[in-house]
Length: 382
Image (tube, rainbow, N blue to C red; front, side, top):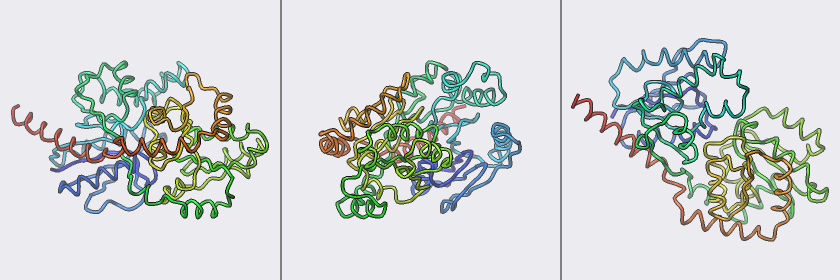
């Protein structure tokens, strides 16, 4: 099959981008050809895939996206593709990988009424409608039931166009880093002693991930506990403003930014807790990665994967409607001093061993083949 994959921007360390690359490589391994169309690309091109940068103009992000979408059709029309798949919302897709939260619902929840009259809102809401409206032919890969419900309430999207897929954690990769020696190695490298608490956050876009919430919770701890607790953040974001926040709260020595990294499982081996206090999160892959590594989690209920924490009984979830910083502060102290820490670790490992947190890429590749075959039959019949 000849496949076209479309996304706005690629850089090697985003969650969406990592999943995009895995899906691309699986399709290539099955013998399909893949042409990729993007606005920008950082890092190496996938072997045997063709990457085309679609010209786009505009000073603002939404104007660039509009230009990309307009020019994209010219490229797609040059070749007969069996399936056009999008990793961002644009019109004309056969299949959409819904990694993002619902744009319209997010703006209505977080912004003023006037924001709905901006050119940016008009463009992105129209592109979302083109994918999810009940009259659209686009089929949708959905990552969480919670987000599916939101889309259906706004657009009336038929149930049969949604395809729910499991997480895609690489269990063997994560587990290969675990063990006493790895734990000692990374903690020594970070300057931690045996009884220090190692809090870990993983993910870019620090405001969305709630890095400020974690810093404030750390600063609220009793002095003796605070001195022995350290927060490490892996990902890309505006580090300076969050470091300044830590400095104002008197805990700059306890907060460290590690940038983007390829050895995240090594840090999981040394961590005591993973924090995911996101403001809005379709899934929250670090949650399930932590469970596979046997690490207790604290996450906001706005994360699509927060329910795994409750099912595993491997940590705590924070109510997010509305969010209470005071409640999170209290919860962090309770977790750090809880006698259940070792039990949470055991529960996490047990849950990860009996639950499918792994097969996303295979399921999606199967779905790509199924949807493409179905379209071929429909085209022949018409």
